[in-house]
Image (tube, rainbow, N blue to C red; front, top):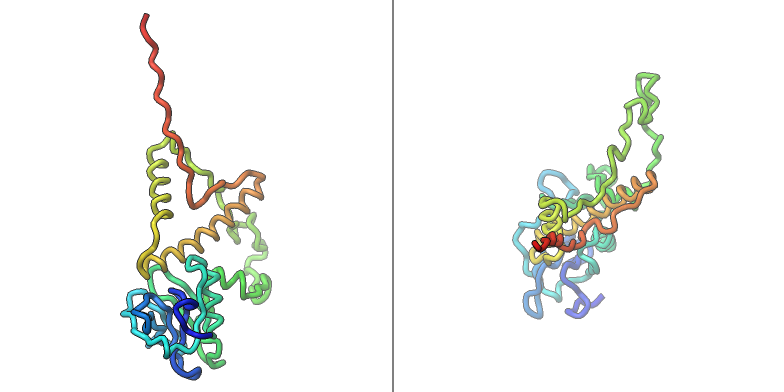
Length: 244
């Protein structure tokens, strides 16, 4: 599609040069009307066919005219949107990390290439058909039949599901809730902050889904708000009786 300022957005995955030239990256900033600042996807020097996008790498200055294709990420806080945009450009987002570089692999990597299969749960949920019995060796002990009651498999939900604390009865809960709300109210302004927010959003969604299932299994109600605790009214001071 045409590369103009009205359609290409910040965060877009872009390709420069001819189709056979592997020069991809992500737009991090505008640089006047004719250029953009790009975080360039670079091949891992230690692993062939493995590519990295580092949040602390210097940005490259690319001319808009040199960009041949791009895919916008409509919601930069959505892990699924990031996967979809890179997939559209022929690249698989193998693993996103808040602490280190994101890992990628091209779809057309050679059959004999050793590339990451990915350990992100979004990949597992969306792209992989898992056969729970295939390729799993039976335990050596016949008494271990693979259920929670024999101790061989640990159940997914150990202990009680999450229940929100009461800020009116605990200073720690009140301070924690204020910190969570401050984090949510803050707007990420740097690459590292946006990368961390994307990772945290995906993590929170997975944990909330698991907790909701745990509550459902117990017949209890899940928390109304996992990521933005409501503001509790301060406790009313006790009324003092007038002496007669």
